[in-house]
Image (cartoon, rainbow, N blue to C red; front, top):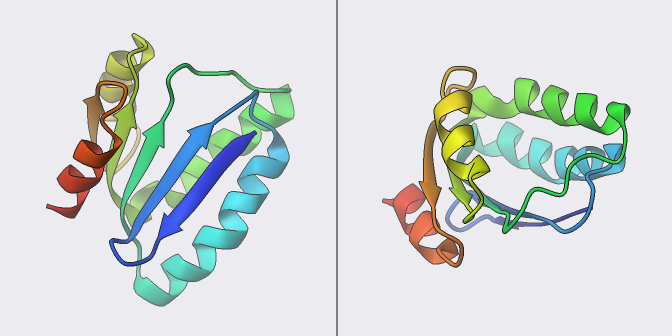
Length: 120
């Protein structure tokens, strides 16, 4: 399950995984984000606030996650990963090879610092 909020003023999508990710999470994200992206041309950034990564509920959920990234990464300028998990550093290095966005890792609790980096 993903909690998310679209800050239209700063053009930043905030997401926080709360439990194992489900296919429906990415449907809900797309239903909110896609119309905004179409009208604005893209997002300035994405803040992923993930104290830990809860994994996927199913293989289908993992595929939906990767499909969402594939379909949206070129329309997002920056991605901030806010976590103390080692996956933050790994994601920053690994994802930079597969997505167009600039990616930066912030320590847990750094959501506002991440949003300022994106807005700056």
